[in-house]
Length: 129
Image (cartoon, rainbow, N blue to C red; front, side, top):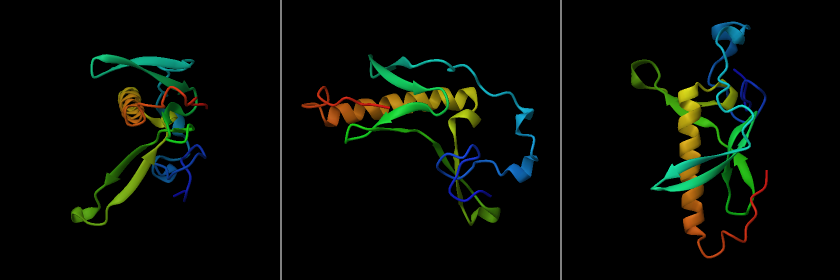
């Protein structure tokens, strides 16, 4: 397993150990549904929320300091007999189309909630890539 890096070399640990599937990780087609989009609009609580996108890393999550970060899918796998949980992460380009769609909606909700928390000054903050 690659400690500290996703399969593509970005932050996090890989969701898939390349040794389990062999070196040929191109056996499944990559999702290209959102390729080329710079932003998209998602409905959150009845109003539209714009989500900034990156081709390689997916939707951008706003931070309190005005910066952004890439979103990674985190999940836990139960060990044998329910013990020894393993936390795994999955990068954007290895997510299925369903996982990518879900991630975009999660990021839209996170961004909306942050704006609500900073409601008196969120318009002053310029989120950048």
